[in-house]
Image (cartoon, rainbow, N blue to C red; front, side, top):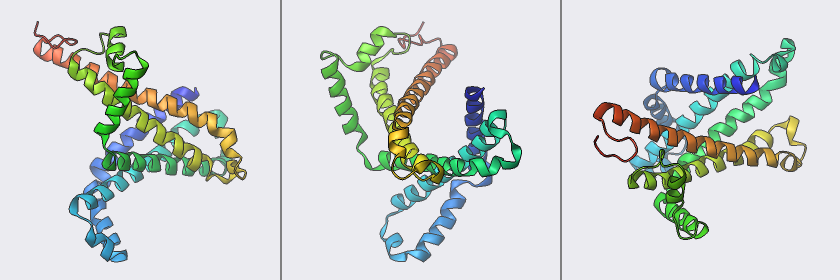
Length: 248
C-alpha cells in the first residue's frame, strides 16, 4: 500500500508540476518578479552579472521552488492522506506531518538546485572521462558500457548508445548524491522532532545511503527506458532495426 501510494504521489506531483510551469506560474513570470526583487535588494551584484547567469539563477530557483512545492502537495494529499495508518486520527493529521513534509519539500527543492548548479558549473565531459577511466580499470581495460552491452545487447546497440550510457551513469550518480545529502541534512537534520542534537546522522545515514542507491538506479532505469522507447518508436516509424540502427 505504501509503495503504491508513493508511486501515485510522485505521479500526481509531476503532473501538478507540469501544470504549474505551463499555465499557473511559468518561468518567464517568475524571472520578471525575481529580477525586480533582486535588483532592488542588491543592485550592484545583480548588474554585474551577465544575462546568461541571471537567466540560470532565476530558472533554477523557479524549478527548485516548483519541484519542492509539488512534492509537498502530492506527498500530503496522496501518500499520507490516503493511507489510513498515517491519516488516523484525522484531528491531528496536520500537526503530526507538517514538519516532515515541510522539511522534505525543502530538501527536494534544494536537491534540484544543487543538481542545476552542479551541471552549470561542473565540467561534465571531464567527469565522464574520469568515470570511463575508472570503469576501464575495474573491468579489465574494457569499458563499462561495452561490458554492460555484452549482458544486455537488446538495451545497448550502437556506439552512440554506449557513449550515452556514460552520461546516464554520471547523471544517475549526480541525482542520487544530491538527493541523499539533502535528505539526510535537511529533511532529517532540520526537523526538530527527528534531529535530537546531532544523533540523527547515526540514526538515518543508512536510510540516506540506500535512498541514494535507489534514486540512482531509478534515474538510470528511466533514462535507459527512454532510450529503448525512442529506439522502438524509430523502428515503428521508419522500419529501422531498434538495436543496431540498420534499415530492415
